[in-house]
Image (tube, rainbow over the protein chains, first blue to last red):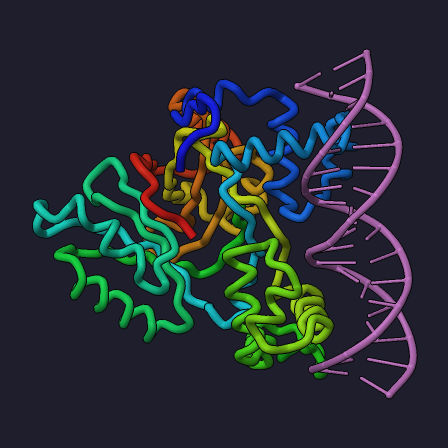
Length: 158
Length: 158
DNA sequence: GGTGAAAGCGGGTTAGG
DNA sequence: CCTAACCCGCTTTCACC
């Protein structure tokens, strides 16, 4: 995308541009993605149009990346969650691993981490059997060893 | 089982009540929490009001737990993410640990897991120094040992 | 950077069939 | 589950501080 103005899209410089009011807006929207502009206006003491321009700016700069409904995975039938520590068996592939994994259904996140596993994944499936299928698929896709830690109960999240 | 004969809010019984249309609605809302009813109407082939009553039902039954804005933590200044494996040093406290941790700022999720650590936390802070403070706070709050894995880069999530 | 107001309309809400 | 009203709130665009 071409920039209209001199946008500084380095993450750190953006963070340093955010003031307390932006923080209030982000806190509210993080907990209620459908908060209205008038609600944000009340909470910040600004006018609706001022809040609106801030929200739009936050969206344009990528601070607000989108909006999601939070789904109760259990009530939806996705009952098995797990952490998977991933260690490459062939390190020449290491840099490609996240890209190879990102479209596999059930893998919710992929982080590279410091330490002996190279990556940590979080996954969710509808059954232990499906989790085994997912692990098999991972091993067919990339040359890695995995260590899976099954979640017994999610006490809280975000 | 032990409770109420007509209790319909058991997670499994709710999941079994969801049909394909509900699945379409949930998939869309999970990726776009601000999808309009008319968009959902197009996607499902139902009328707007039919979709609306389904969405409301999903909200009332707790399948849809809420709506959130997705914030780019780096651009917001929260640059340090980590996984913390938690092992109680005094197991008589184990059951209380999630409750003690849930109001600590920076702890994003807490899962009990199968295996030798009892819990897995995900945390975020604005600096390594703040992460150390968070770890100190955890140790002052509950009798546990911790093993922290720092995230170098988040490739994708949710 | 912020306010306030007016006009248009898109989408949520609530009827009746 | 549908259609058809109704109405609140988001958006845009002003002029202005």
